[in-house]
Length: 350
Ligand code: ADP
Ligand code: MG
Image (cartoon, helix red, strand yellow):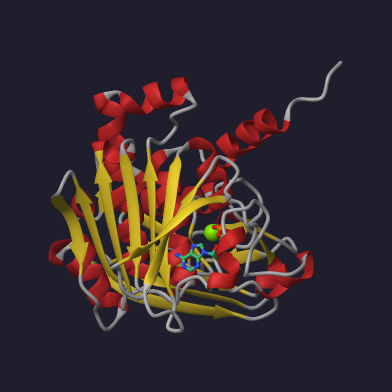
């Protein structure tokens, strides 16, 4: 038996963290949000396979930190596992930039308030700086990812098919929409091959953010709702289909318009999704399109200490500890005047 060479180990583990084009985008956007950005521009060429660039106006990276910014397991966000109890940032593992470097050509351009000008750093396979030069960009950080999956031919081939590319672009837009909804004051643009695919200006509140993302007809069918549960403390807020709303206009054949957030993190939570679907199927028993996903926004806020986001490498799945049950009672989901689902049906045992 032989130990694998370090470069092989790096490539194997990085390709588990950076699984898809959208996954790269998600990591870079979350870094921008963690840096306090109020404006994020995403540029893709050839669906992100040739170039994927995320530019923000956040606080930038201090010159002293740049040598380790993309070295795996270096992070400015936590110091120890205990800090996860109070986690307020999207990132915490110091894995994304380093992993992207292992599967693409990466450069980072950054400027903090303390810097006179920005600097562009070219990084190698292990995330170390190989060269640097002055740049004209303003405050913030721009990460450019070229030739994504260049050393993972099967994956690059997989994402090169026209069908898959288009799916990824759609997912990229859905992802930006999720951040647009949860961060109304964020300005976002998505440009593909120099064409603006989607954009959203800074707005004042969640309703305006919904209008900008889902459009007026979808929003007209949604009602704001909120609910607070003590012991364990859980806040539920969101926008749910109005009673009697035309279900066909408040649902979609994909779950792409069912936005679920846990502590501001867009998540795919199968149990919650199932629960919401069951609830709305019960509401519209005669609708031929009832086997669809409701368009809605559900924002769940819990103490960071009762949440484990370190479940999957892409952090899209979360675990709520302490066998918490979120009782989605009448005030949250049942507007129809029909009998509310029994609590045993609606408890989220996660
Ligand atoms: P993590 O987000 O888990 O810390 P990353 O590999 O994504 O790990 O990023 C490493 C570090 O690089 C971050 O902790 C942060 O200090 C810095 N960084 C990355 N992207 C940005 C950005 N857009 N703005 C400011 N700092 C950034
Ligand atoms: Mg990160």
